[in-house]
Amino acid sequence: MTRAWLEVLRFLWHASRGHRLRPWRSPYLRWRIETYSGLDAEAVDAKAFRQFVWRERRSLWRYLRWVAAMRTGWGAATPRRPPAGP
Image: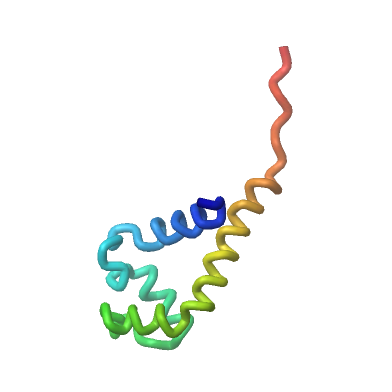
């Protein structure tokens, strides 16, 4: 697996915390769907979740790749401390 795939999986793991087997029940993912699509968060069930993911799959994939790039970029941009002296 490439580093980007690992970052994508990492994001998905954290975003679905507490609801990993039923991500449509995650308050965070419901909120994200509501703010992105306008669909009421309370109306998100398994069917609505699958339809949203399928309809927006290209945008979601682009977003997940962006998240992966930002995470790997943040690590590279962080200044490193010099080694401790003698």
